[in-house]
Length: 113
Image 1: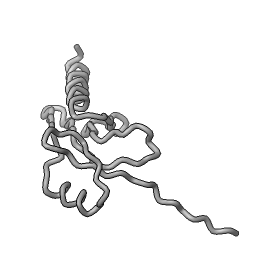
Image 2 (image 1 turned 120 degrees about the horizontal axis):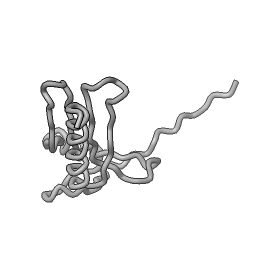
Image 3 (image 1 turned 30 degrees about the vertical axis):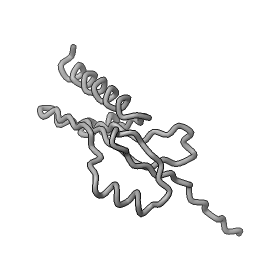
Image 4 (image 1 turned 180 degrees about the horizontal axis):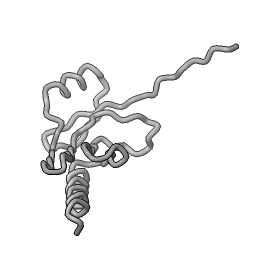
């Protein structure tokens, strides 16, 4: 039986500039310092009565195999497991718009409107 070499996925690391625009960095330790010293959550909406939370944050890392660089993610948590999902976005503006659409959709589902 031949052993296989597992190739590690090549990752790209990003930080945000003063306008919250992603900028690629090539030093993982620089990225790590930036991530630990800066807030990555841009919006969190807690729908208390249902226990659902929608969070939009900066990921800061992207694998080359994804094709499109989606550095922001909006996650839904607290619904039934099959409904807990994540959605990627290229820019902060796109992610915040997505966040609002998701919150409105969930509110319509919960209120039956």
